[in-house]
Structures are given as structure tokens and as C-alpha cells.
View: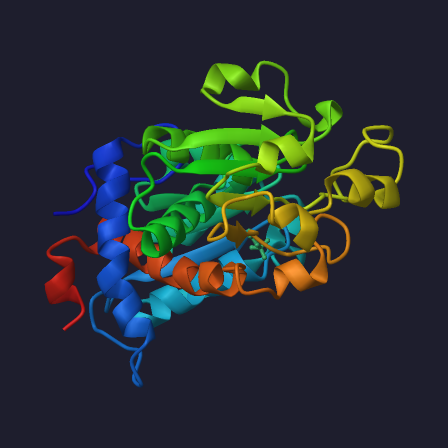
Length: 313
Ligand code: CP
């Protein structure tokens, strides 16, 4: 059984059953990553194009590896060396890639809604790899996979999402996903970095980091997005770190077996102390590995279909 949809544009419009299917499919995919020879023929003859209008290390590389591990042809288009610099529109660029044979277009764009526009114009599957402040669905799915892998279930867990909620597409997708899967979600940060009316999404807000972390099962630390920062949202980086930096002492307020997560890239010593990022409760590297497995699952479900257990043989 595949996903009964052409595209993956956001977590907001995924059903609980669809999220479960993606997470369950990622399990067997992770087995492939652990093999000595990481290659199955599942997507032979399929073409995956990564079209990234913003920088990326983890997402772009993991989609490339995910496609390669399943024998798809994967191509990366960097906008700085493409005809985008000559003024070609997003739609014309994507249509050009499709008529060359793309089966899946993975897009990251600074404009919220860019993947949704493409999805209307392409018959190829479109996967949102991050659109503006809106959504980063594959990050939330890999985060949920990691939580489920470590904790057995998501339902009933207390999850604190800490930091720059306002500018974070990761936070938005995780709020949609984690609340659907039954977690109790808290958003924690200075009031200037918490979107107004976020509580309508079913979360509780905390402006005190200490109160927000107390008794949580998962601490999800967000990057302070210096490149998106408007002036005046907090006094200085040093001041932010003093009040909202996740230190070892603050982690002790959470449950003793709490997971510490971060989507990366991390600003060491700003939103997370180095000893926490490298500590035994951190699952940041596992998140990266799981990102490959979840993206394999998505490519398979959108471009392949069939039984995932047959897909990995
Ligand atoms: N987490 C994340 O999206 O990382 P990249 O920007 O490196 O892809």
C-alpha cells in the first residue's frame, strides 16, 4: 500500500493513519542503512530531483542518499548555478525538470507555499523540504520516528519545543504532527519569539524555560535563526543564551530519561550548551540517520508503492 496522495506538502494535512504508515515504512528502510551494502533496486528507473533555493546539509544530502540507496537516479540542482540566476521562474524551472523525466521533485524555498504552487503544475510528486516559516514536514516525520523509536510511543508524552517558534517551520510541522499523535506539546521561549494565538494549535506556552522543561519526556531545541532574525526580538545572543540556552542544569528539570533533540544545524553555546549537544541524552545524530530512513520511506510511498518488506529484499 502506498500513500493515497501525489505529494507531501505538509504535516497539517496528513492523517494519523498516513503518519503511522510513513513511520512504519521507515523502520524497514532503516535496516538498509545498517547493511554493509546499502542498495536495493526498489526505485530503479525513477528520477528524483533536489531543487534547493536555500542552503541545506542534512535534508538535501539525506534525500540524495535515500534515492541512491533505493537505486533511483538523484540529481541536485543548486539555484546559484542554474538558470534561476537568469530569471527563470520556479514554475518554468520545475516544468523543465519534469519534461526531462523527473518522477519526484524535492523543493526547499524561502517562500511559504512554493511547493503547493508546484504541485498544481507538475504531474511529478512534489515533496516539501522546507518552505519559508511554514512547514518542514520531513523533519517533523523524522523527529516523530526518533521519538517513537526511543520511547515506544508518542501518545501521552510531554514534549517541550524550545526557542524561536516564530520563525520555525520545524516547530510548526512538529506541533501539527505531535498533537495529532497524542503528545502534550509545550512551546517555550521569549514572548517575542512565540507566534500570537499559537495556543489555538493545541499547545501550551511557557516564557520560563525552567517551568517549560519541568517533567518533560522530550526537549526539542530549535536553532536561533540569525539569518531570519528581525532586530529587537531579544536584546543580544548572550542574553538569549543566559535565559533560554538549554544547559545541563536545565535538562535536569526534565524527566531523567528525557531525550534532547535538535534539527540542526546547532549554534553551540547559544540555544544549546555543548555538553548537552554531546551528552548521553542527546539523539541529534540519530535524528540525522533517521532522516535518511524517513526520506527513503517517503520516496518509496510516493514513487514506488507496494509492500515495504518486499521493497528491502
Ligand atoms: N534540519 C535541517 O533542515 O537541516 P538542513 O538545513 O541542513 O537541511
